[in-house]
Image (tube, rainbow, N blue to C red; front, side, top):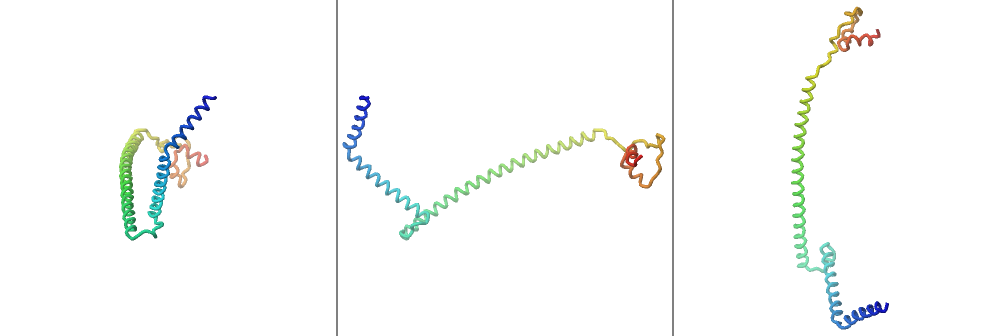
Length: 166
């Protein structure tokens, strides 16, 4: 414990000795603080002037200089903005071209699938329901009714008996 206290006293004594030995460093720190504080205030005043505030104290020459500075800044900002817009337009045009290519590829695939589907549909046999033999061939006669020909054209004979209620 004594060693610890001794080390504490020695370090604090060394710091005090350093500060007391070099009073010029304190003066230089105070001077540096004053310079930095004045610089910060000048920058804050300039910023307010750039924002259009506190312009009353400026002379005509200072106002013209401020206007030139603002014009230069505005040109730089517009140039940067235009550069970003042109880059964005180029990127969108590349994406559009890519999407158009993908669209044409998909369209071709769709046409091929449609053609393949039609070819496979044409090769399958179809069921013709109108080629069934009449019931009269089996021995059941039907009376001829007006309009019965229309039904027989659209329905097979074996289903007509169910529809007509036979």
